[in-house]
Every structure is written in C-alpha cells, then in structure tokens.
Image (cartoon, rainbow, N blue to C red; front, side, top):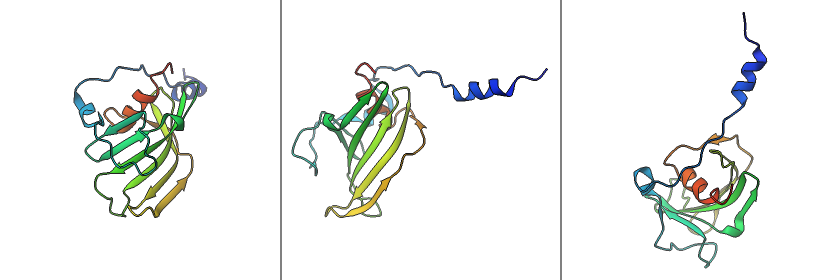
Length: 149
C-alpha cells in the first residue's frame, strides 16, 4: 500500500525546533571572541552593545539596530575586514534576519572601500539558510536570540 504523498510533503516542510545551547568555552568559538580592542568604527564613535573579533575582522551590532518580533530578530551587522578583499572592500553593513531556531537570511548588504566609496549595494530577501556550528551566524544567534526568544 502506498503512503499518501501529502503526508510526505508535510513531513518535509515541517522543521523541528532546534534547542538553544550555551556558548561553549572551547572549540570553534575561540575564533569569535568578545573584542577587547575597539577597531576604528567608521559609522559612529559609540561603543556597540555586541562586538566580536575573528581572524578575518571585527563584527559589531548596535542594539538600536535590532528589531525583535516573536522568534524573529533582524539586525544590521557591521563588519570591518583586517585585510581588504580583492575587490577593495574593507567595510560591510549587512541586514540579516534570524529565526532563533537555527536559520538566517540576508535582506540587504552594502560594501565599502577604505575611502568610503561604495563597492556594491544589494537589496533582496534571500532564502532561509541553516546556521552551521562554529560560524559567525551562530555567534550572532547566540547573542541576539538569548533574550527570551
């Protein structure tokens, strides 16, 4: 006897909730440390509420740029590369949305050269992507989704 096709579709489209875990003290998290050194923030002289440093660059988020709706968190993430990219990019502003169950998607991104000129601006809503362990997106999720989400 064949199983109904509709039942298979429901099983494929229903994603179980992913349990939140605490930030481990070791492992891939060591490359994303709370930044003790304040980089030259090009957007403001303020201290951001969330900031990290990795081997590639600095990331920071101002709480005023975070919007929470239920289990969704949207934020502007700023990134400064330690070494310019091949196209000259040294600074990024990226708008992402986290669903706090282990997925994220981009909705906008602007990249800049060191002189402030725009390299590229992208405005589109991408598909949801699962957050991989040990990535910057896991760090963002742990920092932004921990407040009752």
